[in-house]
Length: 534
Image 1 (cartoon, rainbow, N blue to C red):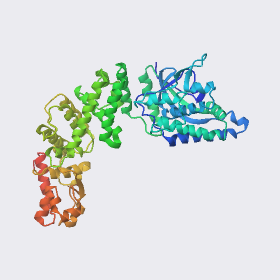
Image 2 (cartoon, rainbow, N blue to C red):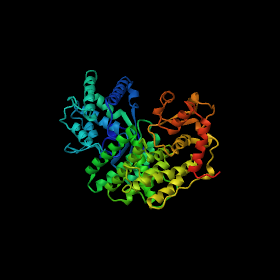
Image 3 (cartoon, rainbow, N blue to C red):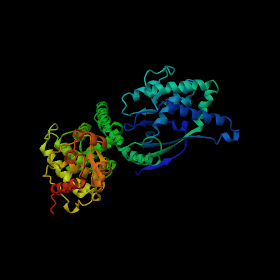
Image 4 (cartoon, rainbow, N blue to C red):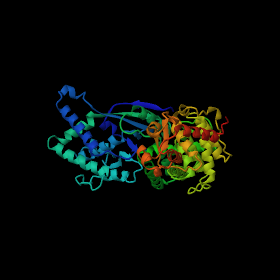
């Protein structure tokens, strides 16, 4: 069966009725609405109700208040995965529970919160189920929906479930002073509507994929799901099949915490990068050098996806953690002061795209046990130095990815690595030839001084700022000279200068920079490094 898509406006009562169950899947972010969002929702509903009450009778029958789209995927009717709308549906369920306290015999209201036995009126099952990887979310929602939960108990923590049910209870108590709550309930169930978009497929994965595409198209609120959320779900289902879901939740949370600590505010971006590198490793293992696929297509459809080739989620997470540690090793080395290896890693890091850096991460991953991560490993220095020769000789170009794809294959198959040097591309007559990697060439020029060790942190000072104490009036090397110093420090204290070229020039010329002499020295160094003959 092909994927089917339907959309039909429904009021709350028809949406939350019959046998329909709505599940918030594991890849969704945790429930996060705070007091501001909850209060805004209640005020909107209150205003809509007041407006409705003032309408003429003939106008009321056609009135509705629209709460937006929700996107649902399913392979089994009556059981829906919520792709978009979890914050609104969860908050609405909490509000309906508060309102039930003012209309306890309202059978329609009860059925919006639970599946109810039509004969005994027994509550059979909660209609909204949370499976997000927030350890207590499922239990928290279950607790506040119990009939005996005290909604007037002021929460002692920042837990959004307890805070929001307390807030909504206070809002309804105030509302009750001015309006009739059961009448408000009738209004909500009949005249407040959603536009659910149903995506049905032969399998859950098929329906989910199409629903996510729709979500990405229509969503213009908040943060969209990224691919790492979907991959998390796949691993969760993998663990679930082996009855290891609790262990997976702990393991995944540990992985996410590492990403947060390393990536700070960009932890989602870092997770995606880890998955991207993981795909490169799989491609390298299988000798693939062609253009890469989109991440979701690779992981969900490709035969070499590690989600398919490895049976246990733990194998996947072990690989992801190893990649994450390799990234951390690379970044820590880049920040070393006085290191030979750090020089080459910094230059790789300065390249105009991520492909050489990711290739270096893969080299660290593959040689993880062989490399001494606490010393100047000669094997690693040789690899990084040769990689710099190759990528800087080719220049700033997206086509470097094809060189890197080939190199990834060689790395994963333990082949001898001799990156190609593109000598015909090189010209040192003008800084404009350096293009988008002019900063890298500036740093390379200083690091080719055989006595120069890495400097961190460093910065780039425009040549014109240094020209205030120079004889020449020309701009060289992309108009930048690498230094960790300001002009003021250079002129006042030469002992603070960590770049040897700058220190020597100032020492020999009594605070006068001979730029022409220095640029000729750089040209000679470049030619020797890239093995360019006159």
